[in-house]
Image 1 (cartoon, rainbow, N blue to C red):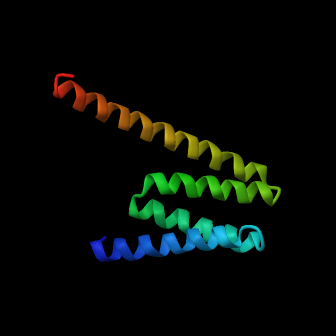
Image 2 (cartoon, rainbow, N blue to C red):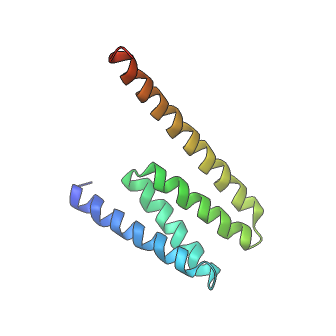
Image 3 (cartoon, rainbow, N blue to C red):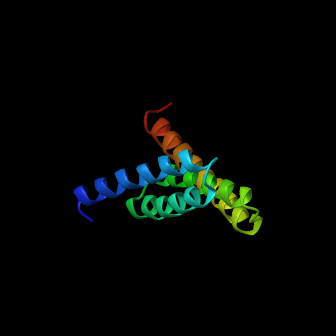
Length: 102
């Protein structure tokens, strides 16, 4: 994927996320569609932190629509992603500290 294509997809994913947030209280079906498409695009462009949060919001929409069987995997994926990112950041911080002699 070219840089231009990635940036276009990222911008579209951000627009979808914002549309999902705007639609959430008034039109759950629209919010769900926006979040589902945003998840796909954020996954494609490699934005793990934003992806984790959008997945959590999608889980909230599923829960609000009375679909706990769809919501639960979203919450699990969100927390797993956050835990992995925290572990990586801690490892990087520790490695840099050790290389500086701290």
